[in-house]
Image (cartoon, rainbow, N blue to C red; front, side):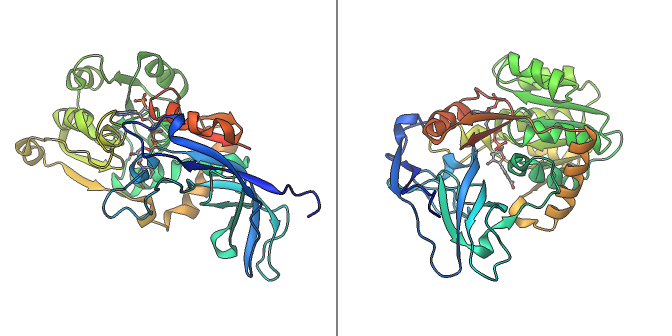
Length: 340
Ligand SMILES: NC(=O)c1ccc[n+]([C@@H]2O[C@H](COP(=O)([O-])OP(=O)(O)OC[C@H]3O[C@@H](n4cnc5c(N)ncnc54)[C@H](OP(=O)(O)O)[C@@H]3O)[C@@H](O)[C@H]2O)c1
């Protein structure tokens, strides 16, 4: 305990952003080191996740979202990996244990022992616990039931969820996997590094036309992170009986204007009917049973080299607000992680 600092730093919302969040919308403040109460654990954070869904929480939130809104003065939160500093007797946790929890965006966190999940050694690298692959795996196996021979379109295929969804689809037997992204440079990297057979580019001509070229025989599955134009293109490309799983709505969430809290899209109902498309939403939080299966398979795939965890590492909490801005404006490929 004698080596502990007296202060901890954390990232707070300063003002509700007008448009996409910029670094100036946040402050990195110093606070007294938090003191654990009865039954609580003190954790020194080592990594935390920079994620798109924060946009919807800043100043409001989508109706039904299972997280509270983040208002000016509030400290941000989200998935984190930390090291136990002190833990109550009988909690099963010991100093030095690595745990995952939901109080990222701060150097030190105090939380109930029950809210800390020990990492164990299922994954070869602790930072891989911040991968969003559980969502990708759950939606592909439970939502769309991807199997051998499928042609799969992953919209938003270069992001945190999407960068793993393409690879996982291939590992589940998909024959051809196409992704969408926002820049030609990322499209090239998706094919070279993320296992995609082809990538189409938002803003480089109608996606419907690009997808028709990339998937001349149509698609069996849509894994949708985006909605908007990507979803319309998927309807146009769908084969009879195609399965669509809706996971995210980046077209509304990360729109430069608007609140980020709605993602309206106009679809031709005739095409949904004629092609007998099934469409379902998937929420990882609504599917906790998938977690042990995912961790087991992810660990095996990482160790065998069948998959990697594509992520960008940002050093230090002072850089976190800028990292959030860069992630939301499409600067990075894969998951963005702040290392402390
Ligand atoms: N259902 C669930 O359980 C669940 C779980 C986790 C996440 N999600 C949701 O899944 C989606 C993907 O999450 P993520 O964490 O992987 O985010 P992400 O894709 O890493 O988000 C950042 C990326 O979004 C893309 N982007 C930026 N502006 C865009 C726009 N106007 N239209 C389309 N794409 C844009 C950019 O990629 P490009 O430059 O490549 O376009 C950017 O790099 C989000 O909507 C998230 O809330 C759902």
